[in-house]
Image 1 (cartoon, rainbow, N blue to C red):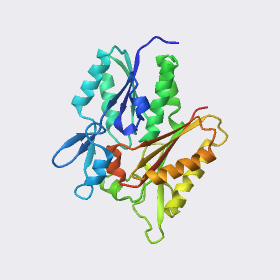
Image 2: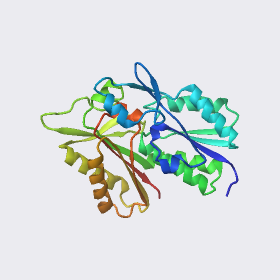
Image 3: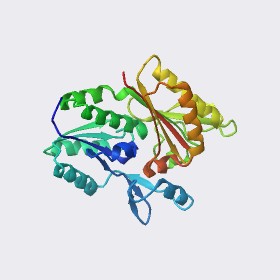
Image 4: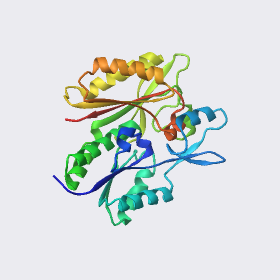
Length: 284
């Protein structure tokens, strides 16, 4: 057991559910959603619904958390009496947030470790949850860092989008082919590779079959593992997400936890409406 006071710092792109983000030792730095006439703080003063409503007028861009916001949060962590920080960031292959936090870690007087999750959205959030649980269990600073680093590749993200238009316009297409066979109704399932960059895992004919195929991918990852948890994230696709949750509850009844949430406004910008995402984390 350890008596060290350790805070967990996440960026809003990890989509950490409120149950965890509102814990007293958890702090969030918001990404920025940028319109021509205003800059909004992700999840603070803009909602996913507002982004969807304005798509017909403007597709905004996103940016790293503002330096002033990061400084404000770090000052609050110090003021609250924490001595060390575990920072959990979305993939360095998709965002510069990791590098900003890594540079800050070198300059701050606090002990600060920055985890590159190699993932985005709820899959990065699952790794933050893992950090929170290790700290709650009294795991030492050194062992917590070692465990988190070792377990990065035990977490995977899979997501389906209704169109690649928004990933293309946002420059986040990665290794995903920009071609969708509209005539054949081919829907891509996207994940992050070992470098944390988007790539196409599968192309399935028809939206429903593409969502059902997510379960095949989960089965492959879970294999014979006994301990695992699953997370579902949706963006303007609530009905489909609830249907998928029902399937997952039937097929994976032994999951230690099944989380369900909405993606952040900043991620909405890059996925557009109709996103279904699945995160899976192996715990043994």
